[in-house]
Length: 283
Image 1 (tube, one colour):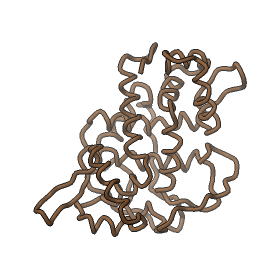
Image 2 (tube, rainbow, N blue to C red; image 1 turned 135 degrees about the vertical axis):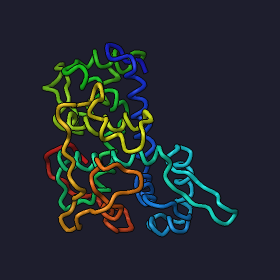
Image 3 (cartoon, rainbow, N blue to C red; image 1 turned 90 degrees about the vertical axis):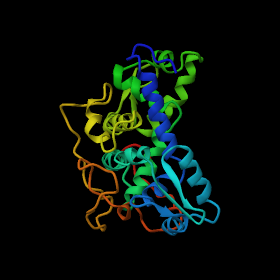
Image 4 (tube, rainbow, N blue to C red; image 1 turned 90 degrees about the horizontal axis):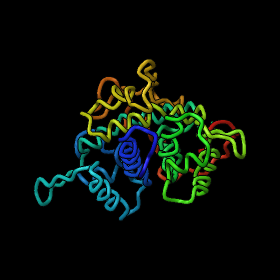
């Protein structure tokens, strides 16, 4: 990816964040990662925690997470195999509370309180649109940018008009604003609010020590706000849930307090589509 007029390592930075999002976005991946918070589990123990997965669905998901380097399979004996987080997997966990905080501030209000895990899944859908990370990076770095200029930076080898489908999608999602045809594009308040999330994803994928993404995200050259540390709330997406009290294995003291059970609605089937009122980026 050729990213011109931006810091020389920006292309690699965007690629790292895009890769991290691609690892955790596929359906059920975040739920499996959260179910593995704590000591390593046998396959049967993990299957009991993600019981909504049908027979044959968990194994390929686990293999993909192992191949991505987020989960490790340890064979103690031929009959004793456990699964647990790698350091890479643990490093990504502190980003999840930040996604929930952003979702509760910026996503459309649903007609019912949503558990945090659903807030994460809705947010990841928006962040993994094609070219989304690169476009958001350029707008954060450059402020207002025309569609033609964006195309030269984000997709220099393509016809410049190809930038408009992803741009229109980001406008529809509420992450990018424009005043109309032939007018420049800029980040919306919701798009700019992604700063701590994208900064922390970048830091985590650069191989910082476990527990460091939250403390170092504020110094990111594009998304950092050293003068204003984001206030992270506890994981409360439903007032009926008890206040979270414990941390998963490997998360630093700077991370918001949460627990695996605070993320799930305990429903074993996919949620029905809710009728969402206007206001905030679409879910």
